[in-house]
Image (cartoon, rainbow, N blue to C red):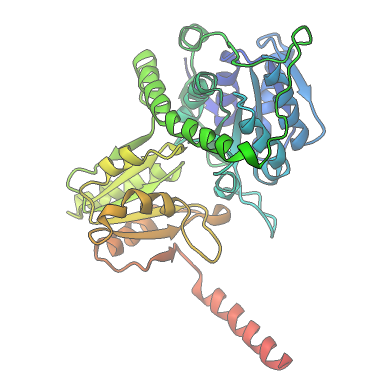
Length: 401
C-alpha cells in the first residue's frame, strides 16, 4: 500500500508483516523510532508478539539469541555504539547459526561523539559472520527486511539490514509498504534448523578446541559463499512477487560504455545517479554500481558489472584509519587479474554526516575520468583546518623537544 511515511515507520510496518515472535527493544538514535513504532503496533493489537524492553544493546542481542534458539522468529535494531556494545553477542549469533534479523541505522562511531550518519558501525562488523544488506532508499529498506527474514531462515544465518541514519530513518517519502497477504505468500512460517527443548535437551555453543576450530571456521566461510546465490535468488523472487527490484546483490546504473565506474552503498547512490546523469549529458563516460549485498560480497556479479571499466572509484562512508578503503579491499580482489588495466581509487565521503552534494560528486568524477585522483581522496576536505591543526602539533612538539 502506497503511503507517505517516515522511513523508520515503514521499516516497522514491514517487520510487523513478517510476524516476528519476539522483538527485543532498546533505544538509541537514530533507530529508536523503529522499535517505538513496533511497540505501538503491539499495543493497539496490530502485531501479536512478545515485545521485550531490555536494559542494554548487549541484552537485546542476547534475548534475540535465546528466543531464536528455542525456535522463535526474532528481531531487534541498533546503531553505532549500541552495535559495538552488543559485539560479543553479535558474533555468538552467527557462530550459533541463528536466523536473527537486525536493523542497523547507520551512524558514526565516536570519539569524538557523533550522532550523524556514516557507515563505520556496520563496517566494523563486516567479519562477524552476519550478512549485511544496504538500502539505497526507504522503499528498499522496507523490502529488504522481508527478504532478510526469508534469507536468514533459509540459510540459518543472521542478517543485518543497514539503512543510513536520519538520511533514511527520519525522512518521509512515498513507500509501497508490503501488504500482509503478500508477505504471507512470500515468507513461509519459521521452521528452525535447531531448537532447544527441555523435553529433548541438547547443548549448543559448546567450547571447540584447536582440533576442530579451523574446520568450524571453514564451514562458516563456505556458508557465506553459499549465501551469494540465496541473496540473488530471493531478490529475484521478491521482484517477481512484488513487482519491484529492490534486493539482490547489486544494481548497475548506466555502466554501458562507462570507462569510469563508481561503486557505493546506501543512500548516496541516489545522489550519485544524478551526478552520473549530469556527466553523461556532458559526454563523460561514467557509470555507477549500487552495492546492496556487502556480506556476502558478490565477486562474480561485481566483476561482470566492472568488466568495461578502466577506472573504478570506491565511494565509502567509512575507511580504515592508516590504510584507506574498506570496500576497496573487496574490489581489489575482484579486479586482481586486471591489475595492470584498471585504476582503483577510494574516495572517503560523508563522514560523520557531512553532506555529499551532487556538485561535489560531479567534480570528483570529472577528475576521476581524467585520471587525476590519488589512491585515497577525502571529498570536500577542509585543508585549511587540517593544515592549521598540523602546524599547531608541529609547534607543540618543537617546544617539547
